[in-house]
Image (tube, rainbow over all chains, first blue to last red; front, side):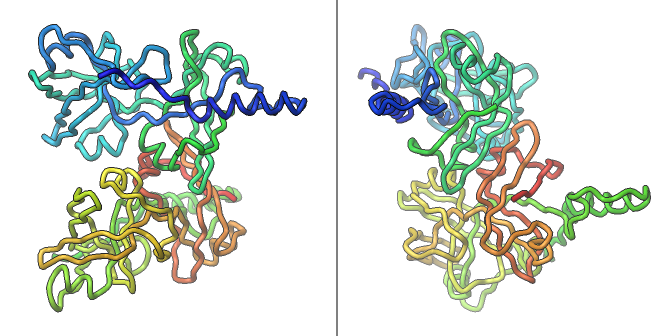
Length: 225
Length: 225
């Protein structure tokens, strides 16, 4: 099985079309269309990041992650491999997707709805900041792996290239707001900006946030300070 | 078993304390404290409303709902009785709470996260407006009851007494915004106002919305036009 190539996100296509149409019409670009990059907003369902050691414990000696679907950020993928998460009250979530490539720490990212269903009290944390967070047990086809810590709800955040940060007038660590339209429109406040030359402009929200506003590929989104 | 009397909501206590403190200090009340009633925001977990006929089909001839916990709106209660909901892909939700008293129609209210887990495509509807919505099967200790229609995601709404509508300057059917503070603050747009002399001021949001912002009893909330 080969990994699915990612189909262009609707926001990417719209951004290109808008730029071409305005150019043909000889009209000045509206602010959103003059952005260096399209605003892609994706919902991250619950998932985990694992170390190579955890992958071997769960899937067997010498085993590595196999890309199943490429994600919008360069080199990132949803793996074919999934695990079963066993929570503190012996409740489980099956088919928890692993995102690759492997990292230097093990981390499970849940929405609060998931955490409540499992019986976890999980803190809101920036990805990677897992000190003093609860742990859990993971089960794979070849064994168990106990995470001492690392179960979090990820802080909502925007990946940004320095070009995007320049366009929006923000710096790494600043907070922005994301306006999402539609019949159950919301505005997400305190959206953390993470700026890095390897990043493509993409907002990650979780399933609680995505379902609160019923985010669809054609839903209007706007990032503001 | 007797039904639990509802403990005063923190917003109710705070509103009273604020009014007394400002009076003692001889200072003019800030806008929020001068409101005729406290702003209570409650999360409605998934639940159903049933007709007396459905209750009898599910729990047995002559059976009625037994109050388990009184809700903030006068006379409304969570019943002791729960049902099992069987969705279109034979997936189930157990212990779906019934809210009483009985109504003239059967309606199941789910968050989108629930609906996705069950495999439903549910429309966003004002409670009671269930024409052309999907149905489901309910299972109780005494039998099954098939709902031909009535599975919805309820439109976010604010119950208001005419005094509250006057204070906020809105009419029945208008839309307001609800600002919710905290580390994952949001603003919920398109909050429908439902004005009735029997209503107490209370905003109902669902678990997706409540978990998106991690609404707690002490979270700052503000209703604006």
